[in-house]
Amino acid sequence: MANAVHDNPAKNRYELVVDGETAFTVDRRSPGTVTFIHTTVPEALEGRGVGSALAQGALDLVRARGDNVIAECTFIKGYIGKHPEVQDLLLDRPR
Image (cartoon, rainbow, N blue to C red; front, side, top):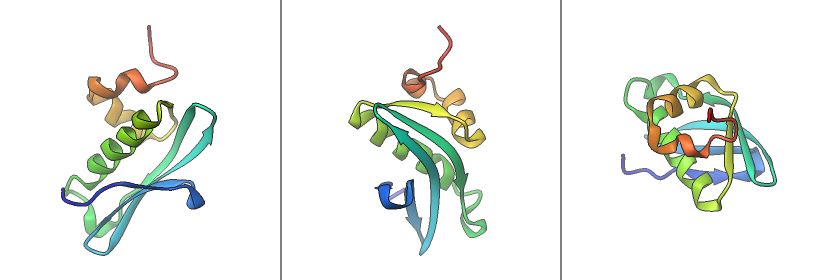
């Protein structure tokens, strides 16, 4: 996907704009931790991999900052569960 995920701290979310529509994941931040709360993908973008691209891009940005993740959002939690390469970001990961 050619579009890049960007951080929008003013709205407490990461965003991905595709075809003029914005998919986003809402978060809450504390020092060293990003808690993902909810993800929204507009109906017009469903089934195109936009949610997965958003999740991966957001997690890449979290990793770049050196933060950890708490996944309260079921979509983000499911994405992490299917992608072992990002599971090290989980603050509450099983040992």
